[in-house]
Length: 323
Image (cartoon, rainbow, N blue to C red; front, side, top):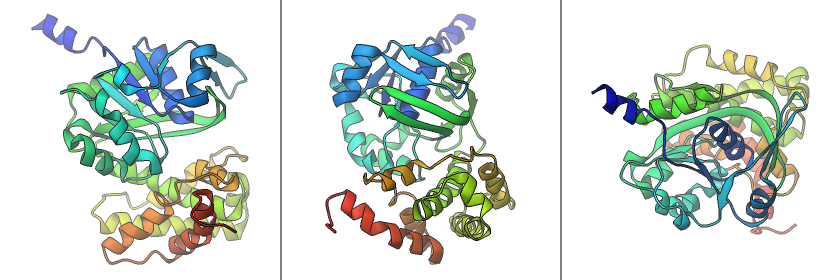
């Protein structure tokens, strides 16, 4: 019996990272450091850079790590793996779920590390709920160039768990893999509460930052924009409670404390995408707040306003509107 347990918890055979932006690259790098076999699924210039130069990670203390990694362009070349870390943008999830199919075996599980709360449902519709975890992360990082990311600040933190909140052996093994690389990792008591706490944070911050084009230090210090942040947070909190998500009573105050601790020049990924004319996660963040509110008979007027203000730029970035 002892030997069987040791074999069961002896580590993964293979882990795939699908989506090698800042999040997928950073946490995939951590898993490589933990000694796990990690395959990065990339394409285009990212794939070429990873194959030619390795993964480059710049840290807040000025250090640079160049990590040789295995990367491929076609998931079918890899076959079934033990776990898949999904780091694509929220608007790419449905397409990613189809592409991930060749990576799925009987025991494979998929951990989405992206903004929003709808990814587990979207992945489950294609892959089956038995293969899907809830997941989220906290990190301030950006893609500097192909195969090159900069961890700009905030201690990286990753949370994941089964959708029914059981603490399973496969979840424990992934937690142990991250622990080996000294990564702040947690299996929360309720993964849905954890995801909505992150959603509370990112939807409010992204919405306010995208409308104002201001960094975190400005948003929290100007009284009018600080009030805007607080009101956006309150709307998301009300939607969560209406959807039976057991957020704590002080969730809004706790998230404002997190925002107060961000680097002053910190920006949200949605904000950067919108400012640079790229498709963004607007629909999965402020748009999702409005949709999820409507489903339970609530209004979210400030999130609706933010969504409406940003929508023309989003449609232009997607080639659906010209102006």
